Amino acid sequence: MDIKETLTTKLVAQDNNAPQRSETGDIQGRGHAKRDIDFTQGQAALVATGKFFKHGLKLMDPSNTAASKHEATEHQANLCRILLEMVAPQKHPQQPVKIPLSLLDIWWPGHIATLIPAIEELGFHRYWATEHYSRHQSASPTLIATLAAGCSQTLRVGTAGILLRYASPLRVAADFAVLELFFPGRVDLGFAGAEIDARYHQQYAADLSSADGKAYHARVRRLVALIRDENTDEAGAVRPGPRSNGTPQLWLCGTGPRSAQLAGELGLRYAYHHHLAQLREVRSTPAEAAAAYRDAFVPHADLGEPYLAIAAYGVCAADRAAAEREWPSGTECEARPSFVGNGPECAEQLAGLVTAYGADELFIDCFTKSIETRITALRAIAAEWSRL
View 1 (cartoon, rainbow, N blue to C red):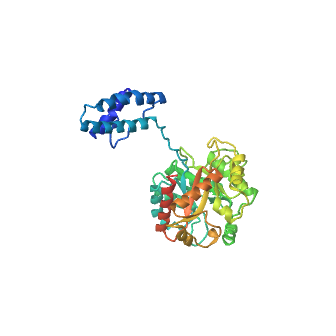
View 2: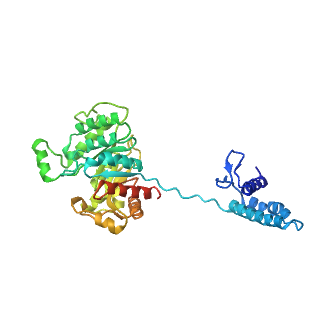
View 3: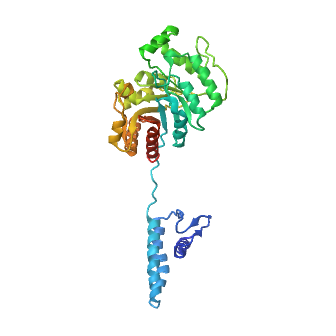
């Protein structure tokens, strides 16, 4: 279709207020998207000098009636508008960086059946259960992850993380082999080296030996070898069954340069807890924390490039004042919230964190007084996050 035919097609469609079908079968006309036409400046000038007068001056002939002159004026206006559309540079909005948004859950697990379908509908990428020892939290993240998997269809589920100082790598590998069998391609195995409260530590010590320092690092390496089915251990680490077609994603979770370096050396995904790092006064900038991981990274068959997630806790409410009132007191909350305010404010603050770390994924949780307000807060952030 040449330029003249294009102009005529557009004008007829507008004058008749009726859709027109183009050569490609696209519907054109009022209320429908126009086809994108690439015109050079020379072609646009040709239209402006030649085609404009051929269509417009014919109607502007002095012998025409006043009605015809009025029609000609409208015709000219339409031509001018169409020409401007053709000459104007096409706008290509910048595509947002698709940073997945996930949930790191530290709260009472009794709301799992309500929470999981809600965040799946909101588009969250992962749900991770944590290991905490208190009257209201769960110290069984693998069980919680299993329940979450059963309450969802596509959501990735996992742990952040199993405290490997107090767990057998063989037992963990066996549990996750079962999870991967029933929920293939959706399971994340995250582990960490944090220590638990002294009272619980003593109870563990009465039956099992905890791993400190080099012993913990040895457990990490043994668990990784078991999941990857790498028989490199002197003890002959052999991956337990049941066997399936896949393996869980491996994640090391931490708050400092030592865990970051270990994750990099083993070619693991690394989850850095920004909020807890503040709480523990880890003296490193976001750039330094990210660099410790990326500089140490050694590619592996199941992960060719570093993959860094960060975790942040905060409060989202109708306004900043209401959000500030929601922030509770307690061990996990001694540090200031990583984000606070309404949905747009929280999303903007979180985007700043992602940029500071150069993170590939973001985990959040909102501190509120009820499951209803928690889901509302997550919904507000998810809505704004999708627009960034």
